[in-house]
Length: 311
Image: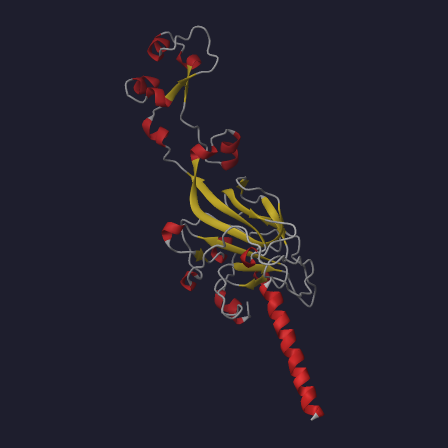
């Protein structure tokens, strides 16, 4: 009888431990030897998590996808730090992994912890949409601290460029002159305010300036010239960076390729320090999340081999 009671007591203890473990996982807590973990607070959420996609997107390249490059300054192009591939069947039961996880490097010859590594923008030009970073971190749908960036690309079809010419005489003979040209501020006294008269008097260049943006389509140059939003446009492509330590950007900031946007941590529903990196296509494409690995442009991507290794 005593033996039966001991067995029942042991079973009860195991059951209690399992329940506690499930609750900790639900609230985003984890126990890991990876270090640097920051516990989240309850189920507080900010923003909306990115959509899932289709496992048919494994390895698929979308030509319109503007994101490219390794998203963290840590062991660039080393596939050994990928702990979970896009749509891997090795992920937690009941969940599909719609991004790619870059984590610490483990080896018998020596290991490297990804904690605190710089996370970088992977868009040639991007605009920060959401910064879900708090202290203490919120659960944020399991993402922990996260940042969302929308990619912008050159917009060569600016309406003014289509309506206007470089020749004021040609524009003067159209209905678009006052759309294409404007008086120079603090213009000299010899300016009459009449473009035809100023042309005949040879002072047009001193009196009028073109309103057509001078686009170089280099994002840093166009930003410096104040014509970024005239020369570039939003694409709807979104990159989400999750489980972050902090953010070095704010909402509506402009970011260029390689700019540091924050650092790696273990916030949210996470079992170790890592960056979950996810790319979503524009809603109108009805594609959802796509495989980020081909955008790394690193040799050696082998999804089947990675899955066989448990990644």
